[in-house]
Length: 235
Image 1 (cartoon, rainbow, N blue to C red):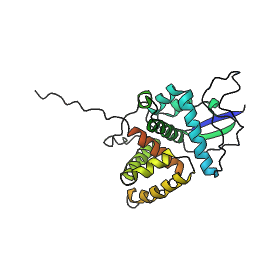
Image 2: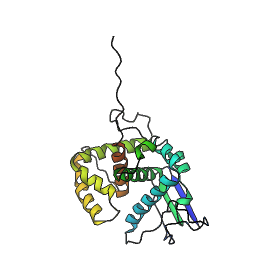
Image 3: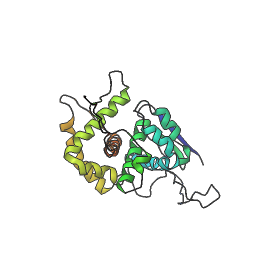
């Protein structure tokens, strides 16, 4: 096996080479114990960009199972404070072969997307095992916040804006296979809604990887019950 994971603090490209076939059971353990499947190239035909997104999702699925405790610690941290935690959660054991290079931001979003899909499919205790703070738009990043924290806040805010008009399409982007006709149709519905949400006078561009990352985190954190506000006794 020759695999390597590289996590960067800034956005980088994901590069994957064709991966070897692998059965549902890992052979190198010398047993037939079923353990999480490593990320490998899908059988269906995808573009290079779609392959990157699909591989990221497959990798996230694996580390959620293999290093669940470390993943839970990482997603509880704010963007910018989570790079070391995601380095600990990442493992070469979740890559069949080849090399993947990606940012903590992309991995963070892929993990949230995987958790949301599990929650929607009724997997037991997902929110309890992977707790996060609910979305709070009153707590904007402070002036000294990192660039990643500010970017993450804006993308979640943008997701909230788009969700108001295209909730089902956003959900379909996250829930359906990368590059599928259903997901492509969902993007066709979502993308026109981005423009009205961008502040006037600004021109921004987003990759689908960035949007899926933001949508996944937004949708999962929207499932977290709000923390009740305890009012002080005025007596």
